[in-house]
View (cartoon, chains in turn yellow, cyan):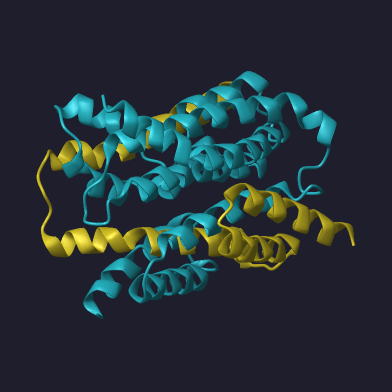
Length: 101
Length: 218
């Protein structure tokens, strides 16, 4: 319990600090236009990177598994249906079915 | 308080909240497997409330890693909230403490949804969108913690695919033009290339440079 308390407390503290940093440091000032444009482009790059790391990597190795295919199928479903619930359910079902084969 | 905006955010993000039940449920199962007590797992979801960071930290603990390594991984995973918070900053009123607290409402989906597309954000919409996801995040964790024994191996049910699929959906929602697509593709390539050589979390952080390159190459 003591080590999990350290992990939880540490994670909570760093998360709070990171989320607070931008709003506190920047005050209410507007950013220059170029900076605003960069910030508008951050989410696509970060999200794509998160997808890659969580579907094509296992630790420090590249890896393809049932979840890779499951997530790909889920992406197609979301692209066509725009239903987030269908997307995550299909991801789990497709991955589970592939693993059961 | 702008109740209408708050409600609109709450309503629009409800599908993400429902999906979050599955994601946080799988977190609860994994946390118990990693040796966390039920209370610890639920408290973690309640006070950290950051899916990718929680998964990153718990997977390091499960693999026998040190608490410090888990915390650093969580910080790196959360580093994307830094630019998101910077982008949000001009849209938040109040003094330092109030701004710091409002900044806690940033989670990927809410942040993306509350963007007005011109560099400004609708804060009450953001708060509403995050509120529904916070409630389901904590409830889902509790369900995973206490229901984990019933479902057995989470990987057998494909629960590990839920979280990445969630990010894919956010990505598809977010990419609205060719330049954004280019930045997404570049971010993916950067992260992929860095996986074998950089510590966990760093590939995602470095991939944020894709935005800078996307702006220069227009």
